[in-house]
Amino acid sequence: MATKKRHKGPPTGETGQEALYLKSLSERQVGVAVKLRDGEVVSGWIEYFDDMMVRLTREGKPNLFIYKSQIRTITESAGTDKRRSGNREELATR
Image 1 (cartoon, rainbow, N blue to C red):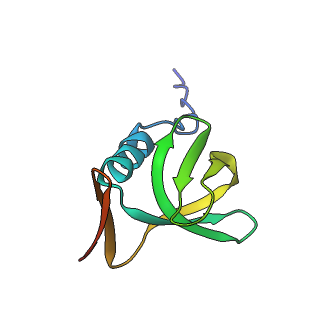
Image 2: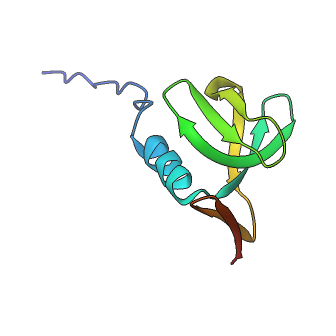
């Protein structure tokens, strides 16, 4: 009797890890560098995200709503954490 080999499909696209990571960055208000598909890099911290876009808040510049499909990478900024307490901002060096 011949046995059929089952072909596995591609892995599922959603593991939930993206949402957990973005939530962590948002809650800790970690500075990030977002590299876009066209090569441009914008910096700030993630204030809000959903399944389609990310809101990047920037110091002294307009905030950006960026479609996730246009993001190549999100990298934590080296050396600084941005923390807000009330109306005051503090930069903590790691």
